[in-house]
Image 1: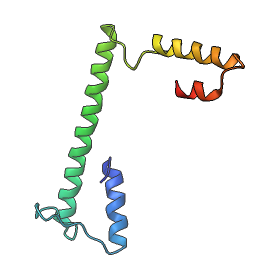
Image 2: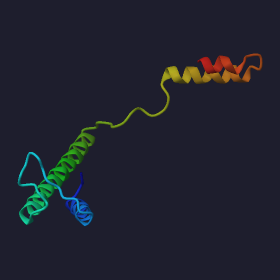
Image 3: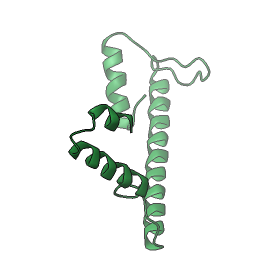
Image 4: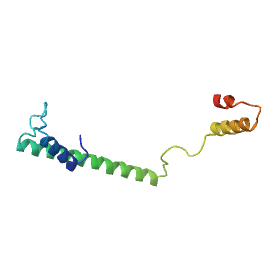
Length: 107
């Protein structure tokens, strides 16, 4: 629903201004119609934000560790050998005025 406590607080405030309350069906403590429920909701959103931030930190640390070990990320740059062959053949057909463009499109 939100990526940070401040974003969630803003959403809940906007909902409350429109007369909309959040009441969890499974968790009776999550009920923004009560002060305690608003507090619990904010605490849970804070824990969720913390968890998200920790996941990001660990992911970045893992990527940096992999880079230091020489791991390359992403796909290979440039065309494959097969794609290069097709490109050369397409250019050859294109320059040969006796060939139609439909031959190139089939490639």
